[in-house]
Image 1 (tube, rainbow, N blue to C red):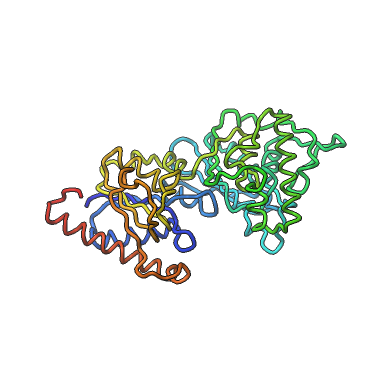
Image 2 (cartoon, rainbow, N blue to C red):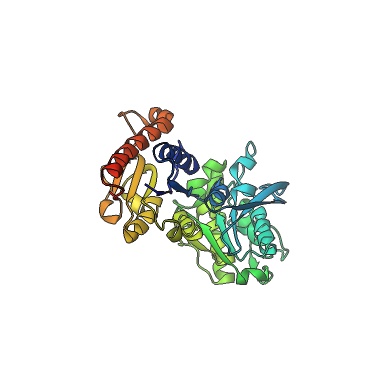
Length: 386
């Protein structure tokens, strides 16, 4: 074994993607000390997204003072990875995240204005490929704050411009984006979005995610009504229909706002990661690829990490090993899709609350078992692949 690529998803509620990479790498080095190991932690758009990209390809963090969720000035950041194409990676959680509103959560009052300020700074730095991680937000303003920071104007009944927040979306009577930063027209904007919730309705931003941001049932209804009004105004003034756009409800409607105001494309996180880190080049000459997730099931091949990686592994004929927290009996045709083998790290039939306590140890043991077998075969057949 001369080269291994590690690209696991996080094991939700137990291990981050970066931690899984670290454990796998340590185990491989113990058995194959001369092996080249390529680590690609997977970002999901939430907190830690910037760090994942920088760890995968290198780069730097740029620190900027912007508005926080309640328009207070805070120190935030975004990443400029070493991809050679002037890319910026922004996680909205860095300036509009739920932890920043801890103890005062109120999605009727919070704003994404700071996200727009980060985008503006990235444009000023010459970045023309901007990735926005949608996740972990404290907001429900449909991205209006972000758009306002970039030059959009929102007008009320009295004809005066104002800054909409979740509780005042219903007051928007006209939207004017003629003043948007002109550099946006030469910029490709991608929003990392791993959910397909619509902007409003029973499965929309307010009803599904509002409660975790501090909204009670009455507030949820008000927030949902506001997003409905915003959707209608966007259609009227911009000619864009985001009412049924999958993912529009991500991050308090930021998915819909990014699509409407910035013409952003909404993509699953794994697609963005594979494209940005140039995965096709990174796996050249690899003997094996390791991936994994908390639970391997029939959905794993549909827009998730395992499915995205499996396409490349199958095309290039590289063995792909999946290491998962657990494996559902309904996994679909994973072996026909590029997966060579799948292993569960769960040792005993115990509840998740118990299993999570031993996840790190169980991952190490499972990797040890896999690598022992690989080493035996490697030595027996003089390096022939499995």
